[in-house]
Picture: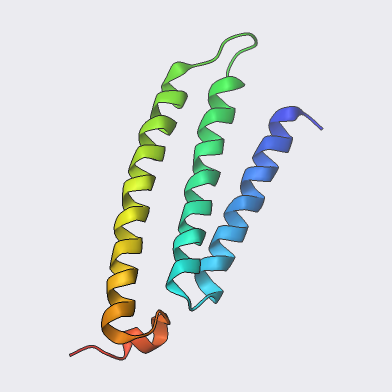
Length: 104
């Protein structure tokens, strides 16, 4: 098995774990972690495909995209956690099904 195949397989496993976490968990914090796992799987693919494009050459475009993506993911996670904390203080729960029933 090629090293590229191993990295892509690991990224696919991370992606499957993230999708599983999003579809089965009811806790908002666990859903945020699932989104982070999905983002990390995509970032790993960018790095792997930029490194294995040509022998002895690493494309810096993949690394720059990942650096921007990591910064944006950190901002999105901070905002999502702030909204989660506000929802917990206001409603007393972080269960997504209970919060979706509160529509007005």
